[in-house]
Amino acid sequence: MKRTEFDVAVVGASIGGCTAARLFALAGARVALVERRPDPAAHKVVCTHQILSSAVPTIERLGLAQRLEARGAVRSHLDAWSPYGGWMGFPTDGPYGYGVTRRTLDPVLRELTAQTAGVELMTGLSAIGLLGDDGRPAGIEVETPAREVRAVRARLVVAADGRGSTMARLARVPGRVRPHNRFYYFAYWRGIRTRSTRPRLWFLDPDGAADFPNEDDLNVVIAAPVKSRLEEFRADPERAYHRFVETLPDGPDIAGAERASKLIGKLSVPNVSRRAAIPGLAFVGDAALASDPSFGVGCGWAFQSAEWLVDHVSDAVLDHGDLDRALRRYRRAFQRRLALEHWLIADMSTGRRLRWNERKFFRAAANDPVVARGLEEVASRRRSSVRAIDPRVTARVLRSGAKPR
Image (cartoon, rainbow, N blue to C red):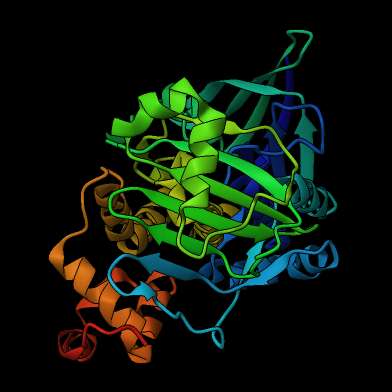
């Protein structure tokens, strides 16, 4: 069995894994980045491809922003519609996010990471076990396509292997699953005549929809009905999808556009959360927290959680300090920043009808630019959802009239 020594072993070379690997290496660590897919251009398919503005500082820190813009990533400002006032008029003079497909993002980020001194990208290897010292993770066992087993020893193991994390199963860290009562059908379109550079959400109460612009004149248009409509879509997915999109208020005109993909269905997308760290092992991205993709948080939280991990534990990794204490700090920071947001998203993803306070808030956002700005800060995850109960914002919501601006 071949042995290799590293400071950090990262399992999964998508957004969270590459971000953690590059930032650890820039801090001076030697990093093994293990990816089961052999193709360096491999990419995630089922994704909304929207990166919220809260994650852009991490992208800039990585040195990734210039590469994405050179490839045509769309600078974007979110907007949203509800039956209670119409468009909420989110501002466009604040921080921007990015619209970019994973077909572009994943290979660009992986190449940047592989070029980083200190990172060794190991493609085509599957993580099959955890190495341990007295029961504490001390690296991973990987298997080649030829069934050769290798040991990759490291002080810290980072699981960045997605919603159904293999590392979580090996470490016996269960995920808490919250019900999700929507399903998805989506397709990529090129040349939509009413194309907007703004990612748009529809809160149809209780159904949902989204239109996310990306590079190369592509839009991903998503139908997110509640599961009571599943048989309607199963009977004739094409017809049901087209009918759904065509009835969206101010929706994308797909009639004259070119469809650039098959119609893709995703019928089960559970909300899953895990402890972000245990001794010797940390989780980032979807391996730590996978929320309803309708809200476009997955990519951004993958970038951000990996950055938080590095900031909290890199000194302990490099100086042989108290790593487990540092991991506990990361776990608390992760919980403080994302637990409430995940709970609220999971609550809405049950397919329930909008509550009176939500309807009131959405209506006010269509009337009052101050409320709209506050709601955009929450929707883009630059501010905590606690912002919604700020007395100054609440007072404006209560005063807001019914007539949209």
